[in-house]
Length: 471
Image 1 (cartoon, rainbow, N blue to C red):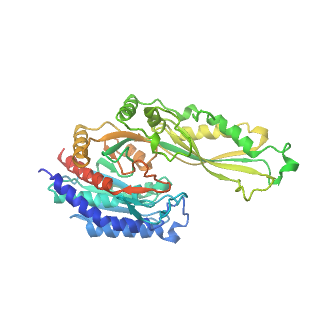
Image 2 (tube, rainbow, N blue to C red):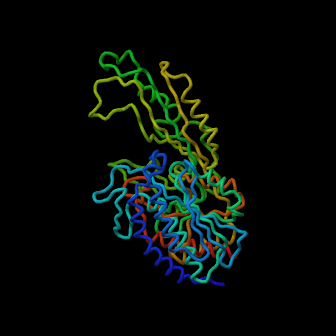
Image 3 (cartoon, rainbow, N blue to C red):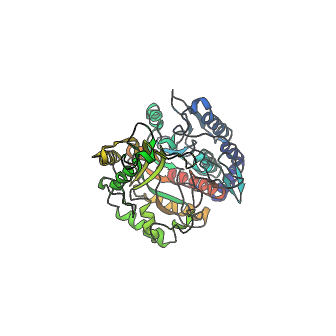
């Protein structure tokens, strides 16, 4: 049985044309992840997004499909799409992953654009969540329909579309525990929540970073006092904060100083980064640089490694610091910063978190009250080598639908579920891919979904499903 790739393209394009208006409706829903909307259940936005996606999946599902919404008390729901075999095996399962929860609004959207305002311009659908990761459920259905209508085959397929990924997949383990053996024997995992180096090839992600999220607080007073009367006697909480941060990050180079956060980079990942750079991948120009700001390295390969296999620290929030307009001549009682550490894929997040807390809380300058609360941590992920059948279909599917071979690279972000699945199914093959190419700006302003790339990725997934069943 040979699947007709022309029919695959036709079916996928037809279903995407039907799905785009629904994706526009999805963007209009402020379905923020529970970390950013603690009252998500009362607000009902996640439920609205779930129902919108579920309804489209039911209306467009291939033969032998069930679409359920799994609900647990106090947990965000999960859409479970189960599709029985079509010429393949029911004992060998493909697990497909995506999510429908979103990051918060963020400022800086261009005129006419906004997080909940869908706009299509030059085949790009702007708005929060379309690319990260609202398109995923639509792509799953379209790929399976394409396989069946193009004369291909697929094994039993389960798709999990969760609603807490942007909060670290906090609710997913509870759902997995309830599902238990229903997941079956998973030999292939396809995740549609990743990025692309350009829009000209199918890009496969080979590694993801882990993370530690912490809140560092420096307190010197119980209330603010007149800065003229107190400065020189009362230590500045901000100055103490600077000293503490210098313990864990080089203020000149940005290098994280704690050895517990570093790993030896595998030789194959070093070679992969060099190869991608030699083939023209340079992530430096893609960022919206201000003025004469420049990348931290002139070497494209080094930038790839620095954003995928080296630890970093970002300062993602602050408390205790009023706006300039609201700040009087007051020596503030405390400074509090949100710290986001990105960890290399093979780094132990528990060990890293313990090292961070110990280093920051030890011997506080001027006897200040210093606390470092670890709010969460997660493991990274490093892909196993591809089996021959997967390597072959990745090369041919990208050439067929993009016109260029598949390319691969590591991603600096994280998908917590991949680490969970890697531990649960160590022998499974992984295809982690997505549509988040240059300037698509997931989590930030002007996020967009490149619609032609979404169609092509979907068609490649159909080819992968067929090859998996035929292996």
